[in-house]
Image (cartoon, rainbow, N blue to C red; front, side, top):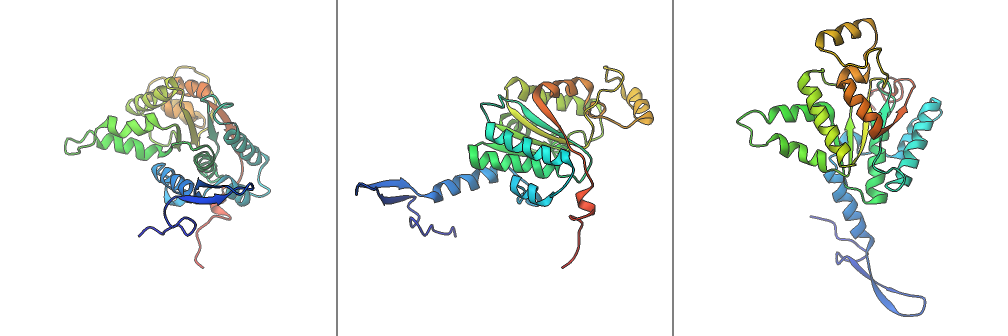
Length: 258
């Protein structure tokens, strides 16, 4: 059973008295709380990240690398300026594993839902690709378009761990479809990736063999994982935020009992 609001007894309205003595009906705060709860539920934030906020990010990474403090400041400014200042642009959070990229991205999404009434969506990049591939199974009733429609339509999309899936021509085409659709519709996308946003020597993504050769002589970049054409498109869609620091999961965040 849903708990009944003790302020309005579930009616959703309160009778309040103004300074001049008149009495008027006002919406109860529970209506706003219910709206936020529904919006966060529709955002599909994984349970592991439900606690993530801009405030908890600041608390969990005290005295960290200057780039992490700068990233937190950028995130707060992004939320405060949305949508007038951001103008459809998003953020590309880059850096090694365990430095709080997903925490910060979810914190931004939650703040936008609460403070700006945004309709947002969280997507794990690898899980999304698996869902799309599974839709090709004739025994599955869900179509590719049905899976992608919420991704296309979300006012703000968090796409977590972009580039994590093995790069293939199909992966490149799928990423291009998602990013181009959101780019054309001027929808805000917040992306996290473990791969550096650096241009390799060649501006051409090349075939699988050439990508393998390049990766053998240097560290892979985001362009290697999603294609240079889409990496270039991201430069138009998102402001790059580079994050550096130690792996939080191996220190403070490591698993323990008690």
